[in-house]
View 1 (cartoon, one colour):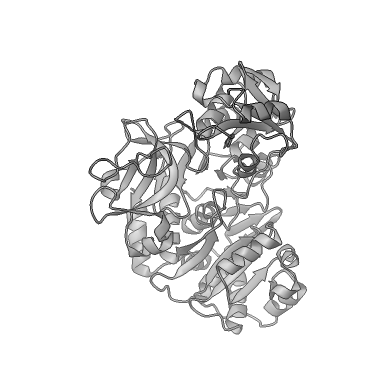
View 2: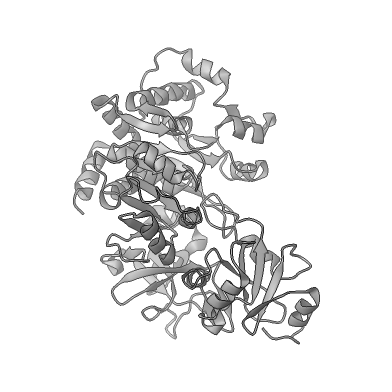
Length: 550
C-alpha cells in the first residue's frame, strides 16, 4: 500500500479535509497552478482567495454548520470555489448541473431542500425568477464579493460524520437518488486513488472533462489533485474532437473517462497526431475490453486503470495489474465482505434448501454484494438495497445492482447492470457482452437492449446504431458468431447516439418503445434466417400473435 496508510493516518491525526490540504499547499507554494481552464490558470493563492470571499458571503447569510447549499453549474473555477466555500463554513454542497432541464432540476431540489440555491447564468435562467435562485455569475454577485475587502479565512473544524457534498445518481436505471459523501470519505477515496491508482507525482497534470457533480469528477479529479498537490485541467463539456487537442495543449499526463467516452474517441477520424501526446494513464470505469484494446493500440496509451464503484455501493474494485478487460481483484475479499450471489429467473436471490444464498460457479454471472461495514453505511444506501440473512442469520449485505463474473484467479469481470441484462429462452443475456462481441466481429457502435414482445417470456434482443455508421451486412456477419440465444432479433436505426451525463448510452427509451412499428418512427428490421428484413406492422402482428417464430 506504499504511502497510502501513512498518508491516511497522518491526515486523520490532523483532522484534515480536502480544503485544509489545499490551504496548506497554498501557504507552501502560493503561485503553483491549481486550476487550468482554456487559456486561464488559477494559482493556489488565487483559488483560496476566491474560496474565502465566497465563504464570507455565505457566512453573511447565516450559513452554518450542517446547512445545505445547492450549486447548479458546470465544471469551472467558480463551481469549484463555491463547492469548497461550503466546506469552509461547514455546509454541505448539493451538486447539480446547469445542463439539466428545469423540470428535472425541480425534482432534485425537492429531494434535498437547501438553505440557499446558487446557480450559473444558465442554471438561473432555467430555474426562473420565482425559484429563489442567486446567480453567482451576475455582476451583482461580483460586486458583492469584491465589496468586503480582504476576507478573513475561515475553516470550520472538521466534525465527525459531517457531509462534504451531496450528489445524485444518474437515474439511468431508475429515479435519481441523493447520496451524501462525508468529509472523511471524500478524503479517503481521493487519497486511495491519488497514491494507489493515479500514483501521483509532482510532474503530473490531470485532465478532467467529466461533471464535478458526479463522484468520478469530484473525487478522482478534484479530490485527487488536491491530495496529490497537482493542477486540475477542467473542460466544461466533453468534446471527442477536442480531447487530445486539450491533452497536448496542457501537457496532461493523466485523464479520466467513464462510460462510452472511449468509444466516442475511437469514432473520431484517424489523425497524424493520434499517438503524439503526454498521457501516461487513463483512469475510469465502464470501458469494455475491445474498446480498451483499440484505445491502447490507436493512441499508444501506456496504461489504463479500470475500476468498479457505484454511488450507493460502499466498496470498490480496482485493476492495479493491467489485466485486460477486468475491473481487478479484491485482496482478502471474504474478510472485506465482497461476494457474488446467484439470482433466479426473476433476478431475485436464489436461496438454497437452507434458506441462504449460493455463490455461482467460477465464470458464471452473479450479483456483486458487499457486507455492510456499519450503521452509517446502512443509512447511506437505504434499506431497500440491503439483503439480510444472506449467508448466515443476522448478516446484512448491500446489493450493487450489477452482475459480475469471477474467474478462478479471483479477478472480477463486469457483465451487465441488472436493469440492462435480460433473459431470452431461459438464458441470461448480457447486453455488454453482446456489444463487445459485435465490435470484435466487425460491427462497432452497436447498442443492445431487451424489449418486450407479446406472447414471449422474458425479453428479446434489439440492436440499435446510428444510421449510416454500419452496414446491415456487417451486422449480419457479426451476429452469426454469437450463440443463438444472444443474437438480437430486431434492429433499430437511430438518427444520433444519445449519451447521458455519465457518458452512458440512454437505452431506457429504446427498451420502453420496443420494436412495435406503430410506436417507433425509426427504421426497424427483424432478423430471420440470419438476414435483416424490414419490419412491417403486418410482420410485427404475426410475431406478436405467435404465427411467426423468432
